Amino acid sequence: MSRAVAKVATGHASKYLQQLCKHWQHNLAVEFTPEHGTVIFPRDARGAEWAADALVTFDAGPDSLSVRIDASSDAHLEAMQGVVARHLDRFAFREAPLAFDWQAA
Image 1: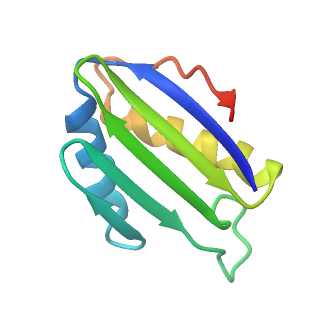
Image 2: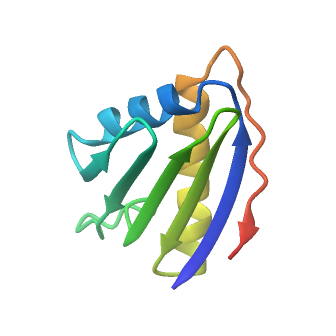
C-alpha cells in the first residue's frame, strides 16, 4: 500500500470537501460531514488508470484542507494525486491553482 498526505492552504476547506464528496458520491462510495470525508475509488474493470483501489480522506480545518491518499501501488498513488488536485482546482477556481505539498506517509 502506498500513501501520501498533503495540506492545502485555503479558507474554504469545508466547502471544497463537501463539493468534492457530493461530486463523487454519484459513482463512488462516499461518506462525509462538513469536517471529514472519505471516498473509495475501486478498481475499474475498464482499466482506467485513475480508478484503481484507493481511499482518499479529507479533513477540513479553519485554514487548510488535509488530504490523505492510500493507494494499491505507487503508480496508482501518483495518478490519484493528479485526480484529486485537478478536481479540487476545478471547485476552487477562484484560488486555483492550489499548492499541494505531497509527502510520503
